[in-house]
Amino acid sequence: MKTTQTGAALWWIGCLVCIAMQVKAQQPDSQPQQQARLADYDMNVAKINLLALPFRDISLQYERAVSRKISLAVGFRMIPKGRFPMLNAFESYIDDQATFEELQNIRLSNQAFTVEPRFYFGRHDGPRGFYIAPYGRYSTYGLDFNEFEYTIEGEDEAGNYYAETHTIALNGRINGFTGGVLFGSQWRIGRWVYLDWWILGPAYGAASGKLSGSSSMPLDPEAQSALADELENLEIPMVDTEAHVDSKGARLDMKGPWAGIRTGLAIGVRF
Image (cartoon, rainbow, N blue to C red; front, side, top):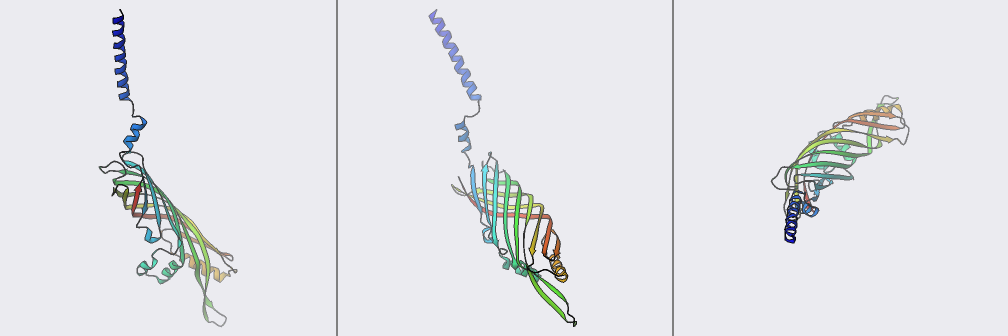
């Protein structure tokens, strides 16, 4: 009887062991196993856009892999206040000398935040190979005219023509939101180093803002008219402008579509 009971007990133990092994085989990977699977490719890459640096543009990006073929990238760009970057290099392309002189007087600054999910199509796992990345960007541009010139023309009591040039300081900003699609390719060129080519990323959206300034002296009707005309002639690409001038100063409202193109060559390190 004892032998029969012992044999039956061993048979039940064997069955339970087999069932337990089958159940464990069907269960999801444990935490250490999941970490081992994720360790097959790099999870984090921090980058800087090299092509933007000559334009006084500091463009940084952090990319985090969320699966083997998908990642999420967050970017921040900053241009410190100063003259238009490399403006002299484009002087030959600007036909209007007055426009070029106005651009020389502008002080520009910029900040931008970008969010983009990336979808990779290369044969490697992780953030490597050709990718397509729809993105959204919020940008803020600061504009300062230290000396915005306007000219008052007319005739004096004796009938002599005169032209008086005056200046007013204007400052303000333009805020814009754009959405687009970036096409690019990323390579790992060393154990720790990545190279990311932002091939082309067209975008379209909307922007609005204003420029304003106060006059140190009350503006008479002639000065108001001359200043309004000069503001209306100020060419700001893509946006519509509307000038408002009174005896205290001026304001230029800006609103309209906004477009841009992203491109660059970024170098990064994984961690």
